[in-house]
Length: 491
Image (cartoon, rainbow, N blue to C red; front, top):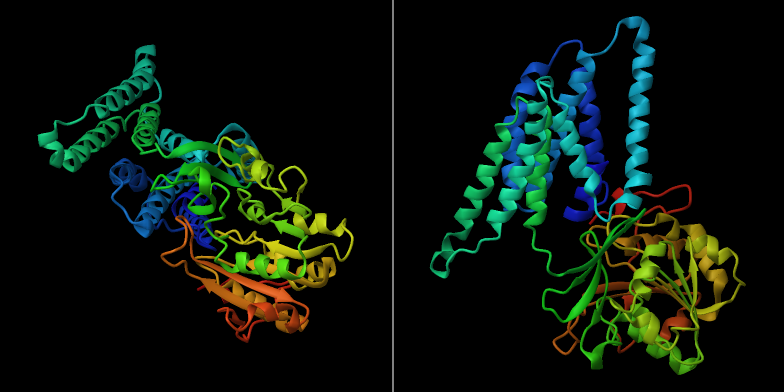
C-alpha cells in the first residue's frame, strides 16, 4: 500500500497503476508457496542486499525518468516482499496449526492496511509509511540478532553516525572552479553511503537502520525550497508550493496541480491555471451575466477557490468540498486569498461532504450554473459522472441553466464519457479545449471543458464566433452507478 501510494501520487498519477504492485505482491505468494521452488529462498536472501543497495544508489542519484523510477521502486518492493514471504514459508508450523498460521497472516494484512489508511494520514504529512516499510522489511532479513549489548549499541549507533556525517558532508559547497565536478561528486558521495549500508548486511537491525539512514539522507538532500506547506488527509498529500517562475503559489496533490494564485498585488484575484477569463469558464460566466446579472452558482470541487474570482455582489454561491483539508488550505490567507477577498467570500455557503449527498438536501431549480470541477489526476470520482448523477444535476438547475464539466485529464478522455451520457439523456452539449495565447496571464494552462444544457438554445451564446464544438458521437456504454469502465476512455 505504501509503494502504491508513492508511485501513483508522487511519481505518476496514472489510472489502474495500482494493479501492478498488487499483482507483484500476489505473485510473491505464488512463488514462495509453490511446491517446486522457482527462486530458492536462500538465494533471494543472499541477493537481497546486493540488489537493494544498487536500487538505493539509483534512487539516491535521482537520474531517472518516470517509468525507470517506477520500475526501480517496484523491483525493491518485489524483492523485499519475496524475502519476507519466503521467511513466512520457512517458519510455517505443522499441518494441524496451518489454520492459525493463515489467520495470523490475514490479521497482519488487516493491521497493515489499517495503519496505512487510518493511522498514517493522522500521524504523517507525507507518505512516510513507505520508507518505514522498507526499513522494517530490510531489518527482518535472516542474520545475527544476538550478541553483547555492544553489538546492539553498534547496530543503532553506526547508522546514526552515517546519517549525521552524510548530511554534514553534503552541506559543503565545492569551490567555483570545481563546480563542473559536482555530478561526479554526488555519485561518489551516494556510492559511499550505499557501500557502507551494504557492509551492515550481516546484522539485520543495523542493515535496516542503515537503509533508513540512506533514505533520510535522500530526503534531506531533496530540493524543497519551493514547498511552503505540506499536509495530509485521507485523500492524499497536499503541498503548497511556489511556481517554478516564482510568480504564483500553487496547490499540488502529488504531481497534479489543483490551482494557482498570482503573487503580484494587481493580479492576485485574476483566475489562472484552468479557470482563466479567456478560457471556457470565463466565457460562460460572461455570457450568462448578459442574461442574469445575479447568479446562483454551485461549485463542486473547491481547489484553492479560483472560481470565486467570478463572484459578484448579489450572487449566491454554494461550494461543495469533500476534503476538509482542502477547505482549510483554501481559507488560509497566508497562502491563498480567494476565499477572503472575492465578493462571495463571506456569503458563500460551504458544504463539506460528498456533493451528490449534499445536493439531495437542496431544493430543485437552485442554480443558474453548476461547475463540476472534481475530475483531475487518476482518482476520477466516477459517481459524479454517471447517468444518475447527471439526472440529479439537471433537477437542481433552473430553466435555461448550464452545467460546466471540467474534464482536463492527462490520461482519461472524459469528454467521451459525457458524450455517451448526454446522448442517453437527449440534452445539448458543447466541448472546448482552450490553449492560452501569448496575451494570457502567466500560469494560465491548457484546459478542457464541456458545457451541458437542456436545450441547444441555452448554449446558443457559445456558438458562432466561439471555438466551441459539438461533442463527437461515441460508441460507448453510458456510465451508471452500477457500471463504469475506465479502460474504455484511456487516452
